[in-house]
Length: 287
Image (cartoon, rainbow, N blue to C red; front, side, top):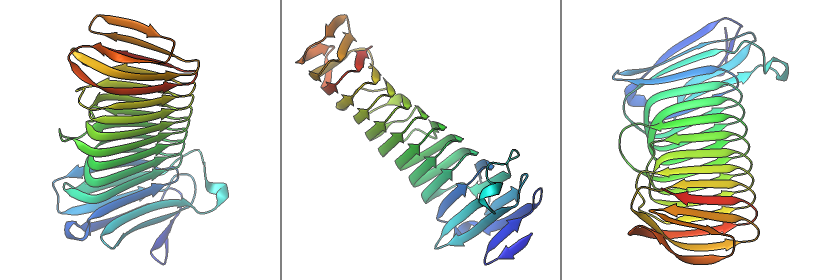
């Protein structure tokens, strides 16, 4: 292992280990090329980082800069990227609320358990991430990979921003005051959702399963598909605009199929506004 200006060059099969005191760390930033990354939070006084290179030399950094623990894996050359055997990265963090947490994965995998932060951001290219987290502000961007998130604890986030190109994002049990969703040809699945939701769908799909119908829905669909499930007793004050798409409503024994621009109140007594604009896609709102 060779050290160059805080960057370690790890030979294939070699390992790097380092620990950091709890008091030094206020944030976490992890950026990997192809590593299989596992993050856990435990009641300890230190953070531990252990990295083992796979089948190629890699550049590896683990250091604290202005309170942020920065961990980064890079290929030594463009020819070493995408080797068959990936490296292994294990990160153990103290249990506490971090100011920020950032995860950036190229083609590897990453899991996290019990991570909490004021702000959380994840960027996934073509790998897979599975996270048990909570943050007041959450931002996730997926290109062609798969991201699965489950909520740690029972608090409600202030804001979530979700962007998907052709990948899949699934959020389990997340509640948020505001949620923004943008998908090109990918898919977004959310269960346990609450609050105001704004969604733009090109040719992908969106599935929302509400835990509580307590906010407005603003939905724009080009040629994609949206499936919205509301709790029993829910109703909608609907403003529907269409070009050639369709809209189906099945709320508390109120069943209608709209093929023209329309508006009106449908369903149960817990009524909230839904603005739906469909080009050539389809939307279903039901119990």
